[in-house]
Image 1 (tube, rainbow, N blue to C red):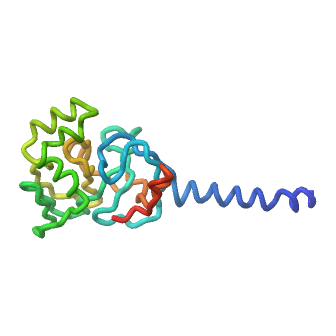
Image 2 (cartoon, rainbow, N blue to C red; image 1 turned 90 degrees about the horizontal axis):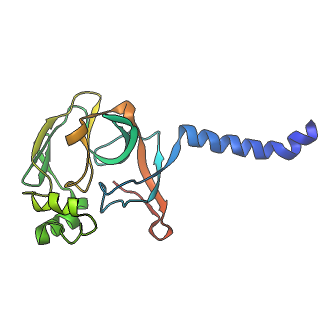
Image 3 (tube, rainbow, N blue to C red; image 1 turned 90 degrees about the vertical axis):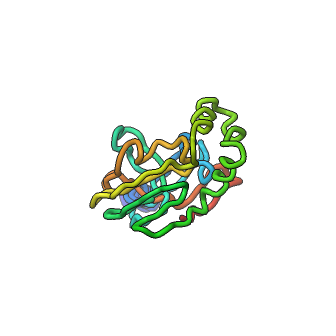
Length: 191
């Protein structure tokens, strides 16, 4: 028995450490869909950190409140108690204008041709964009305590809090911290 522990003990210890990290600290996830374009693309592989404090503009993985079997990647826009408003593509949080520089590439494409070139792979997306008056439709929400307001960066086609409602903290699985696939796009995800 001592010989077995001596030979295999380190292997099982390392295996137990990796298992504990996977269960309690980090989780790999895949982006499924285009709601976070251009920040994250369909098929990319990410690592989420489960112990993170969730802050405004963090990219997170969350279960969708209306379909708990679906895991979505979204950006936190409103924290508990916030008043979030979008008017004419300008975001204000608690009355203060907020710069969403991560949206600039797609806002420019919307201004250029209403995303028709970008959405050439999907006629349904082209139809949505063609009928849109702005890149992000106007809204006003007061975020309840214990809840979060999340949006996809590709606002025209994203299913997010505007569709499925606020997200309870218990549904947020973690903050996206690292992209590891594809290899030529490995990066730390800064929010």
